[in-house]
Image 1: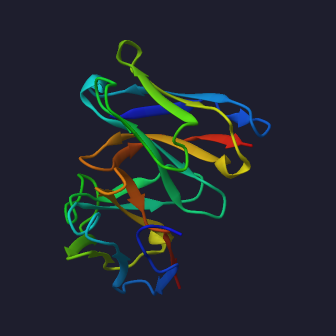
Image 2 (image 1 turned 60 degrees about the vertical axis):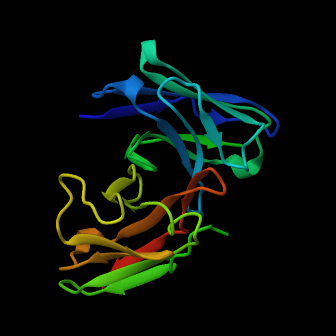
Length: 115
Length: 110
């Protein structure tokens, strides 16, 4: 069974930084692209970023490009999202997810970020 | 403003069949698979449909997906009260090099 557990959320002032983590289990982690997706209050799902199995290819949404950095550590079965220059509109529940071919498949419960 | 367009709401009575539409463009739905998710409050979204019309194991066959050109739809037959949730469509967008979502459709079971 796929397990994804996010951590690192919290409350931060505008302009501040946070680093989210996602611990994965139940599948061959290094073989899978991984995503971060966020859900803001009163708004829909918004894709944030994705990273390939080797960590060599990373894509970002325009709304976070230059401010957020996604990375992974395959030895620790974990992905990370370093969020800098945070803005109030970044307030959301952040979910990590496995890739299902071209979009997320299995999702974690999420971690709340409040700016 | 979401890249994919969904109706904000839909409704039906128990046992009915409802459909939710998702409209995009040639750079997303027109050239890539469509994914559908169900989201209940305080839970993680779950994948209902992948590759436009395929159900992951464990998803009831009451849920079905289809795609034609730059549009897609999700159909739910034999509507149940537990189907009341938010539903989202998604696809990879070649022009944006990212996943795009619809704005979500809130389904109410009357």
